[in-house]
Image 1 (cartoon, rainbow, N blue to C red):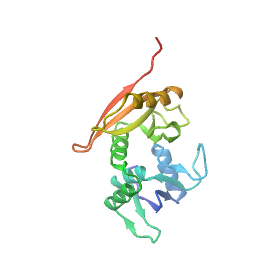
Image 2 (cartoon, one colour; image 1 turned 45 degrees about the horizontal axis):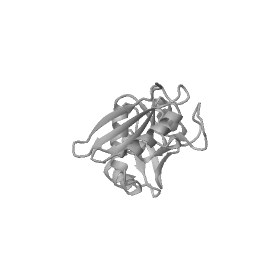
Image 3 (tube, one colour; image 1 turned 120 degrees about the vertical axis):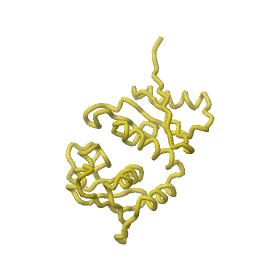
Length: 184
């Protein structure tokens, strides 16, 4: 997709909407970016595509997405990053983890319905159930035992492995710790 033309999207609140249907199809089919507007489980994309700010910043950084505001003014990568930080104080660690996981070849989707930051797929939604849930944390954060148990309960109840992603903002790196529950 990198060789194809840049796709246009419009920043509307905390989302970026791609109105061109062919562009929406390319983004969704390419690697499950975005969510078709008004569709719960998409087999095919025939509607505009709604991108989260994490996805939009990621695609903008790669020159795959050009974002405009509602006045048709182009919003560059740096400005889009600053706007995203204004919507979510955890944006830096969320973006760092998202980017790291995408670069490792995972399909990264929202994990909010599971009480996590991300759900990870090897193949994609609709092709498999997400085997992993990811929670992004600053690496200098002290975790309490009951927090770890709470994270684990959620992932265990939906039969997914839990991954804690610890972000070192000074070096822009991520360390991953995976939990797998076993019965004894």
